[in-house]
Length: 305
Image (cartoon, rainbow, N blue to C red; front, side):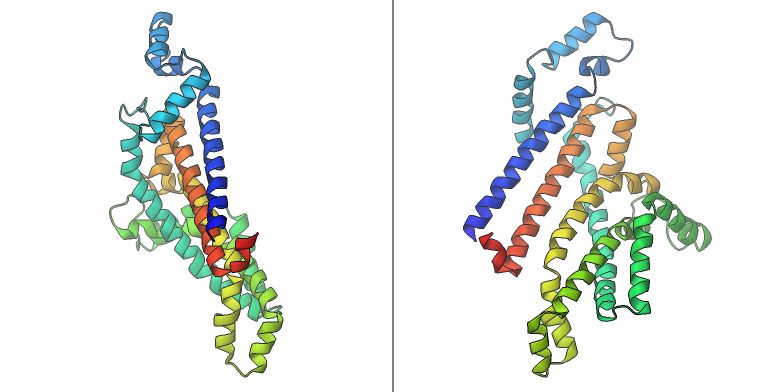
């Protein structure tokens, strides 16, 4: 297990370094940063002063290692538009995005896993076809359109839920449903496929031959093994949700990291965009690492690969 952990940590570290290089390169490929900071009315002398002040006149390799050193100390620079520390901006909004992602993942798992199990048990029946239809609809439907339909139904027509803001838990219900439904089809399909494979295995037939109750066979013996790939997929989907929260947070005006990224992109606030991209990528790497470790605990055979 220790060797498996070291291998996965090494891979995660290599990916993190690669992401940092790409994130740094994207900032410099987006244009002349000194001109962006100075604005359209800045003179050439002022732009040159800005270039010297921010170290933009140094070689790119030197700039990268200086930036990486600041990053280790959680110094992400200052926002061009908000005129505030990028770290403070993200720290204030990150709990909102993480809370939305957690609620959306819970919605997806609570809907997808029972549907997947039911579709596998009732294979080739109307229940199976209904579950697959729900999955197809979820994959085909744009998340922003679904979010707008939720607003029309639950906020405008029924007046059950608030439209925008993040003051109470009720403000997160519609965003969590809209974001979670996007991840439901993939989790449901994988759960169904895993259950079909497991239910056809020899040890399941042996368990049934021993006279074990159907519920015990289904949930204790079959579902545990069928959920092993779902764990990794759930981590991946959570990372996608954090990235996809840009649209949902903008629709519902949640003031999270996603909307911060949207505002920064609209205003060419490069340090904020760079920090958000790097943060989401690092969270994605950590989640993938945790999923690998959890899978190794659930299935010891994975440790020797």
